[in-house]
Image (cartoon, rainbow, N blue to C red; front, side, top):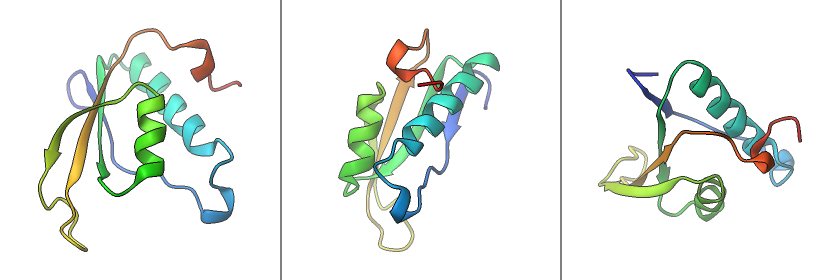
Length: 97
């Protein structure tokens, strides 16, 4: 948390646990914690080639706000900068689901 902005640095699930909703729950929990600490928005970077992560983040209300050229050191791939304003959570984002 920097001032009123929460930044997600890493979200990962082991391959055998993907597509079970764990990343969604982690993101929702992180959002809940950020809101409790006073964050007004959340940001993250995601590889342009990571279609699964892009889909998840967009389904959670994140929007592409920009591009970071050569962001990833391993292959110099660009990253999308994604932003989500925080307000009330939708019922389907409740971590207890």
